[in-house]
Image (cartoon, rainbow, N blue to C red):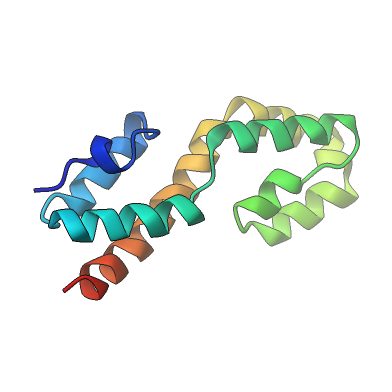
Length: 118
């Protein structure tokens, strides 16, 4: 049974719980492979918040591009973050935006790590 905090000490809260359930049956080598791939693909919630706040200064939607919401990113860009209201809402909900993206990434990476280390 792999220890998530040993391989990914930066994880917290719901993300930590989700990753723990995904890799609970992994060997140490598989968990290390998962951590290496996952760390390179995940988005830090503080990065999402920072890029969201940049939207209040002029370039709205960058945070949406980072989490592969291309359509929303284009919409935010051309509407100034839906007249700043959407950007403010996203600044409040930045952790859930990051968690949704990271949950999807973890679910994609887990099978790859399990197969590649066998």
